[in-house]
Amino acid sequence: QKEVEQDPGPLSVPEGAIVSLNCTYSNSAFQYFMWYRQYSRKGPELLMYTYSSGNKEDGRFTAQVDKSSKYISLFIRDSQPSDSATYLCAMSAGGNNRLAFGKGNQVVVIP
Amino acid sequence: SAVISQKPSRDICQRGTSLTIQCQVDSQVTMMFWYRQQPGQSLTLIATANQGSEATYESGFVIDKFPISRPNLTFSTLTVSNMSPEDSSIYLCSVRLQGGGQPQHFGDGTRLSIL
Image (tube, rainbow over all chains, first blue to last red):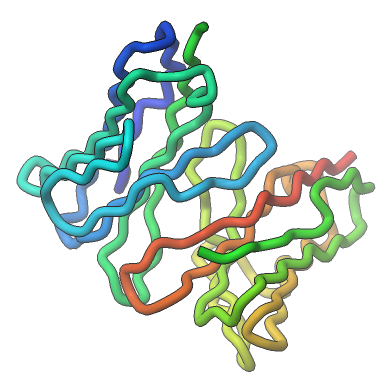
């Protein structure tokens, strides 16, 4: 079993729709959870960062963490063509432990 | 966050040659990392660049193939040595600004193609 599982998609949605992305993981020691957005020919850009379980909202973006199910989600409301990118989940146990990444989920928002 | 600059942004190289990638950060950072990103794959950590000491390599990566330098708290280089077509990939530098658990921030990467 891979440490982090993320369905690579791609996912196409019409403009204005809600985008729902998720990752599952196997390591119960993970406490820090991140979502990165990566545009074509660019590096990953930190989008959301959460610690432990719960929800975090930032504008149109909501990150959810369910540690009991080892499942994290990212929701994008009122999606825009500028949201078209690859979204990577990442997580860490903290300290000097390395980040574990999903494969990334390509999202296309159609105008 | 920090501004992370990588050079070159892309290159096309002949097999058997070596290329050095530079990573410059606009502030002093504790931790710097080098990753490889291949199509359809997760980001793979190559090594942690330690200031003033040898880099710490992940399983499957060796110093002879990927020598790393980190002369100070704002700069690091990764060399890809004796390149083969299998080394064609995106190489990314990242930094962690503070202590454990903090997220990493990435440069825009170096897109490397080996002919």
